[in-house]
Length: 178
Length: 321
Image (cartoon, rainbow over all chains, first blue to last red; front, side, top):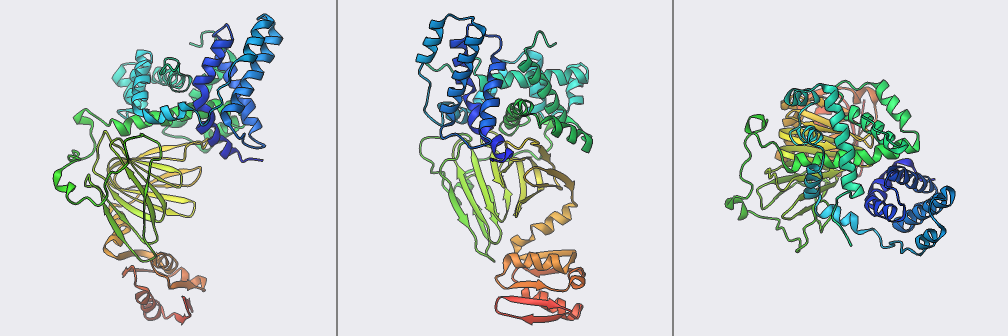
């Protein structure tokens, strides 16, 4: 049994950086864009629980195999896509290299990435986020600066945090790799 | 505001709510903490939280990299120019990390170590200095994007020339200390880490990945104690912090210290170890300034001030009634 703290660290270090590739994989093989978050959540849950027994030799291969099985299950269950789509899916090359170029790309341009990602947030969320993380203002100070209530500040931080996560991990408009 | 969120999207909103509450709360209670931990027992909740926490932590680096630009809100002394030529001559450590300059990766690190009783001061090309105390191992890497040190064991005082384009990051016990224009002391003691801020400002972040990840910005006189999962901040008189760094002059300053504390401290610097076998004797307190190699001074205090019995053996000195 692998301790939870180690699995937590493994999840952040090795699984999360695959989110951009997983997102592309999902988009490519599922005709709807709604439900990406749910798909990711299912993949994460399965690999996290499997890691309680042991860590996979290749996280990347294991994550994509899991994603693949989930998609196949769903396609069969929902019968929304004709069978040839399943065959196509099964013929897909699942990226297997590890530890994955995303991790390196993230490290290389961490600051530039953060700044670029910040620029893509909705304006109010961006402002609240920057005031807190760059200027170190408290929620009360941000509320005064933006002339809004503290609850609104909290909401903008919430929005900003989620959008930033999608940018940084989901690669919503991240560097386009071929 | 939750326009037709799917279940996973709704969970992300809740996770963000809880994370932000945890991070910005000024009166976080034990009850809040238990509630959060209870919620984090559910794996789906936990994973959504870990994902956002990783982002929140990364976003905090924005501050280290691009600190306050508006002059009126800068709480520290104006930063000195990081690359002055007079320091270049005094360079002991060159930045020789090939062409690839990774921001937060672990490039080649050089290792510096002191033996028991030794001290060493490193001077970097940018004028920063790092004083290593007894029995310390520090790894260091600097390049044009980042300056990083890993305190593997022991204690060090960092006097950092702040450079907003090149944050100085110290990792110890898995936690991170990010300089925001600073002099600070880091001491690793078993699984506990102590960071004392002497001048300027720095940020401490607990180990990434721990669910209850915390960070704190330190001002002068503030001390953080971090274990694997906790971070507590307290305030110490600056005079006391000065005493804590007195080892740089080869001295240990004890104020109302117990004999046990003093013995433990001296044992860090000397191969001859003091052992106090009597629990009442261990609790006796005294004020003194003792050289770091002052086992004999300690023995004299024990004998003459407290009338204790001393028995010398090969590598140990037994102190008893």
